[in-house]
Length: 282
Ligand SMILES: NC(=O)c1ccc[n+]([C@@H]2O[C@H](COP(=O)([O-])OP(=O)(O)OC[C@H]3O[C@@H](n4cnc5c(N)ncnc54)[C@H](O)[C@@H]3O)[C@@H](O)[C@H]2O)c1
Image 1 (cartoon, rainbow, N blue to C red):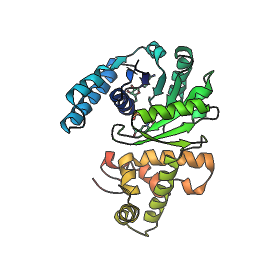
Image 2: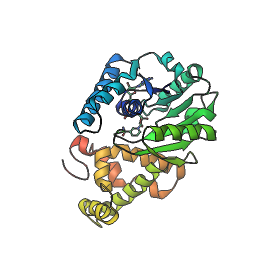
Image 3: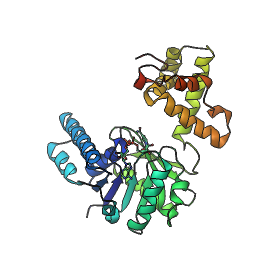
Image 4: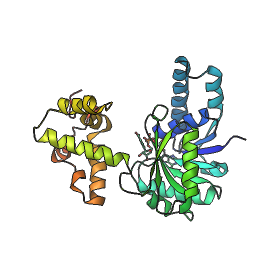
């Protein structure tokens, strides 16, 4: 019998997780608050499968079968059958906690309850449930069908069994995992990118090198696919000021303090690609 997965939130990440899981043979229930959000999510999945078929990476029959394994619902009670629940709603702690409180009542006793949060401590999400040992972070990367990594995050009370089941799930759907053994701010990936972005912005701010040259150094010197300042523009200067600021607030480690240049860019509405201007002009 196919394993059952529930995904809460049919946005960019939730629909991507549903897509790759259905392709790997999971029966998926995708839950969002409105029919419009579900239709958008399912439309995106269908269009993505079509692209894979066009590229010859999936047959039309496989795509059709995978799509048929995804059911959509606005009813949270529908997740009661799932072996694994992955929450991928807005990055707001109150919204996530409300969902985990409800999941605690609805989900199967032995279900793994995972959150796709990029930065909220798993321990704070787990603490609203009566079963924090079943709660774990599964931090997938965007776009989920293309990106290989899943960062597994152990909350303070996450059990070894839960971590092992989350790892098995991520691997079954084709991902490579890394394990974050302590629930630190920024986990491993956001810690690393934050340190690099902050240093790159400081070098730029103090006139040591141009944005282009700093990015070229990382691409050609270290083999990075994209330089840190171009990455910041793509992600959003505001998002990175927020992310690095959170890590700084928690660690008091100066290397994560958002540089003045980035704080002023946010004040000026210079947020990167989405506003047409960041470290580069678009
Ligand atoms: N976008 C990224 O690159 C990225 C990467 C890694 C992790 N994340 C994390 O993944 C999570 C989701 O991000 P996203 O980019 O997919 O967001 P998104 O805005 O694209 O989608 C969020 C979805 O959640 C739905 N939602 C809100 N409240 C809900 C509820 N109570 N029940 C069900 N659905 C609800 C919304 O209607 C929306 O469809 C966030 O925690 C984010 O930090 C995002």
